Amino acid sequence: MLIERAAYGNRWRSVSPAAKGLFALAGLLAALFSGSPATAATIAGLLMLASVLGAAVPLALYLRVATPALGFLALSSLSLLFSLSADATGNLSWQMAPNAAANIAAVSARSLAALAALLGLVLTTPLPDLIALLRRLRVPDVLLDLMVLCYRMLFVFSTAIEETRTAQAARLGYSTPRRSLNSLGLLAAGLSVQVWQRARALHLAAEARCGSGTLRFLTPQFQHAGRDTALAGLAGCLLLVIGACAR
Amino acid sequence: MSPLIAPLIELHAVDYRYPDGSAGLDGCSLRIAPGSRNALLGANGSGKTTLLLHLNGLLQACAGRIDFAGQPLAAGRDGLNALRRRVGLVFQNPDRQLFSASVVEDVSFGPLNLGLDEATVRQRVAKALTAVGLADLADKPVHHLSFGQKKCVCIAGVLAMQPEVLLLDEPMAGLDAGMQNELLAVLDALSARGITILLSTHDVDFAYRWAEQIHLLAAGRCIASFAADQLPQQASALHAAGQPLPAVVNLHLSLCRLGRLAASPVPRSLGELASLLKQEENTCKFA
Image (cartoon, rainbow over all chains, first blue to last red; front, side, top):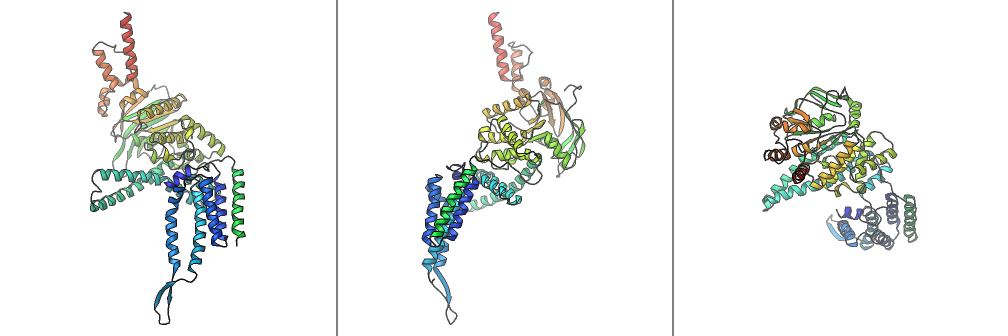
């Protein structure tokens, strides 16, 4: 929901998704080709500044969205810190990995830059616009249909879960750990039936409007799409130059 | 309905049984005149939704026949698509109808399925959203809308297909008074454009106030069809369908007994009743 809030409430909401996609792609490539951790960190910083200062995504929200990914990154770095080795007698032992600090710095800085590039895209572009962009990029219809339905159902089912949970709580369904477990099971079972019913209802609704299988929608139009894409291309080139120059 | 006007939709003793064996429709016959405003009035489980699903071709009758514009409903994909192009259905729960995340996208789904070009679809979507008063919310995500607004998006999604007949399943359910009035204004405007409207409801007061023709459903059968202004004389049929007389009719009868109002004209709403009382008061003053 945080991503959703930022995507609909940022300054770049009306900027063409193609432009934002191009900029994010350039950011990913710059992260990939950056020669040193310092360069990758610089690119990460620039991408983050673009989101926070350029698109006016609140810094606190940005950091909260990034936290889970940063947690995974920290865990991965921890695993890079140690290495497993076997001595002559075949005994396994843990030891600090050689060049651990350098490896961790390189991987972490690159990952941060890649994360910042993707966050810049998803925090400034609502998912329907992204799906429309993917449609233009000729992504298979079946994948897009799944994305459309999953995205819509996310909100329908979160409401259904909230309503059921409230109704259970109002009748003391969560008063003890044992009852909580029981209520949670009932909620999951009830939701499974609802999923089936909703799927049937949506199928009927599509049929009622002459649906023939594929979900076809109008793609949104963006003013100044050409100008935005050119600017994003320029900014993307700048990132790539920064990444390449410091090799 | 005058027998001289050829019905647009006609059901001849239609039967339908659900897969579990329960009866959805049981010898249901009724006629819908072109351009008319019709209310299907019945208790929960009387077969209103089942009937609407038949008229849009989503369910097929087990027995009997349904004619549309004098022709039996066609079977097969092409026949059904031709029917759905002319008969649009708005479901009761908008969350069960809307599957796209943005308003414009969802409204565009039907017209795109008709094979129209993009420019025409954009034009139709804009027109449909204006008709339901949601032009300003075109780019909003569906999950940010209120229940009433979602319902209007559902109607716009069907209007964009420019149907001749609009079927609405319990359109007033879950709407507050303000939204009900807005929806009524939309329905009035559509009716003025000549669109035939058939809606299901269990609210006898609303049906009496709004409809031209009322069809009473009970246990899957249409037990009576009559012009709405004939409703005060249909107390026994209403009773059989589990419906009371409208409050305004009861109030009018009481006022007639007290000698405060004449037996005719019979008001269709509390607003009309208040106007009659005011007129009567003014007449008394001048007398």
